[in-house]
Image (cartoon, rainbow over the protein chains, first blue to last red):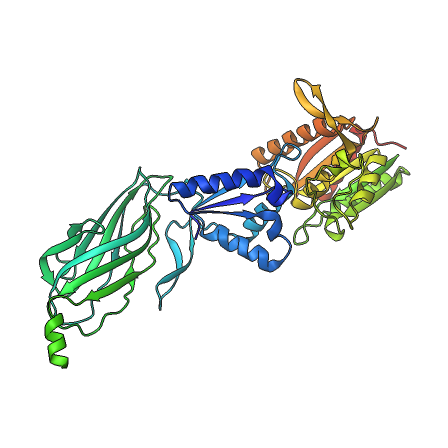
Length: 256
Length: 193
């Protein structure tokens, strides 16, 4: 997924001034750690397969930038054609947190975003179901890492719970957190606060956790998105990885 | 006098045959020759912005090969009136119509001339055809109409039509009313044999 997709609408394609400007912008955005790519519209109008590639790229991009010359005081043919394709494809759903996910792998296949000015400002909660499936364990600490895009005017607060959500403890990403309230039911949640025209995007969350009894199994778990009416967020996956620490030695001894 | 109708309908949409037929019938009744070109049925390719029609083969498009572009442009510049038929597309022309308009570039010269403080490309020919631009839409809204008329105003600055008329029709408009309006426009444009 491109955070920013640049559409080059010039009839000259890669030789155009628009392409030059687009490349400059892509590099500029990448310097700011913003994922950006450029497509030349002209190259995607010749076949259904190529057009579909363009539609898919538009569908998942958070922002679209169209760069094109003025031909006859308006957008050139390539851009008009792209506009018609976008309208026909009904890409924009105005569903800020609408997504299509593969439930078996928890990979987002496609998500829809509003045009950029229709986010509902305020606070939104995303929360997981139980991640740890083993019973009889006591989860003592965990480290949450997150792959996300953050806007300086937005804010986020991550929480972990080891006791099924009875007690939520604020955590900082990439920092080991020792639970005050231990338990066997690990969950996470995040509050995202955004504005009408911008939002943080969460692409994935990974949690490494330690426990003090023998684990039974560790597996992927589904998410429940519990949100009201606020900003866009995209939750892709949670991989709960067990780390044997405290009981590693005893496990080894027993197997021997 | 001759008229060329450039029908910019999309393959998947309204074909504007009502408008095309009314204009053809009116012109025929006056003994004026008329040719209609349904653009989505031609092999017309888009302008690639190579400017060979300015600097290599002035007046002739030699950058795009193997299509009917040059033939259509020749008919346009030899006509007295061109009629645009298009679905209103984001306030402007359809891609089919926009494609052919961009191919008009050889009709101008690379050099520029100041017109009311704006630079515009010089004429290549002494005379250019007038333009009747008809857009259709399911729901007419003021903003769309304003954009379309402004766009046509800009086009009139670029392509030097002696006269032009631009109008947006609702697709729900009755045939009789459409016919009356089109006749009025042809009269304004002084379409007479």
